[in-house]
View (cartoon, each protein chain N blue to C red):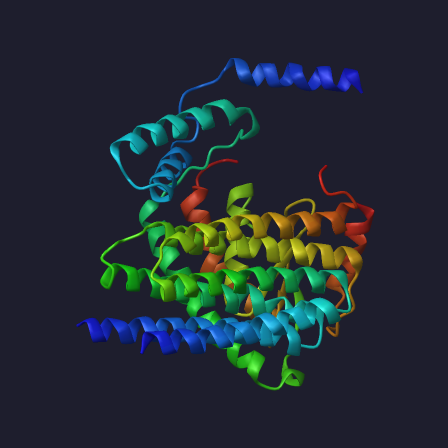
Length: 183
Length: 89
Length: 116
């Protein structure tokens, strides 16, 4: 047990020695914005918020080896609007399905094979699937290759998988994982 | 007029709360009960936001924020307990 | 103008309350657990979202105080709703809840889950 711990601390030391400022610029900007929103935006809070937004990522960077990189910010904005519209549609569809006769619903599990590899991208995809029409992501396989999804009313699983891959996975892949990158 | 609308909405939310409490007591399985608790706290947030509009007071949003944070942590803690048999790993 | 905004706020609040009610109705009405999972995660999120939007509009137009905090509540709920749905679904799969769907994928994943 103690050997193991020693090993871990050694590894951590190796990471800690090459600390750098602003390891996650995107996260820092978000932290500052949320700090300003939580408190009333004033000059003092701006300074305190900047201090925290730079200091906290600096101190915890050993736990977050992977930085999120956005390759196409405009597409991200477009994607967020797409998801927002889809959430509204999903709500109406699910509401009608709930109010209608529940015997007619064809609930089903199906598995979506994943092309995206980053943890963050998979998280975004799973979140999007849960928030949009009649589907909830239930489990990720241990090798991160397949996502188990439960649909409330599924006519054919193939169509749903195709829809998810085309509509959500493709833009996410372009935004967060550049297709030319070799990871 | 707005006050009447808020009253109607509050009654609807109260019915929603009662329905989730029904599922909480009835719920055949443990995840059903967790889901009912999850719904319960989200509906309670909605009720508190409504109360804030009715009283024209901004202080209720702090309460709503706090409930959103704590409710999520509670849901995850109980679900983790089912998954691992231990709350804090 | 103020009357128009009041109507808009009232409409948003009623829409939010309706969706919250339908979400809880789904929680009671739907026959098996994984179907019940759909009601609250979707309907309730938009329910609270609509209500918060209504109250932001109300405080901005009537009380003349814009509070960004309220956005944070709905933002936080939008981020956490999938996470809690996912972890509840995972817990249910772990306990092997009965459901009506005919499938082989679920059994398969259960096996992989227990062997993990």
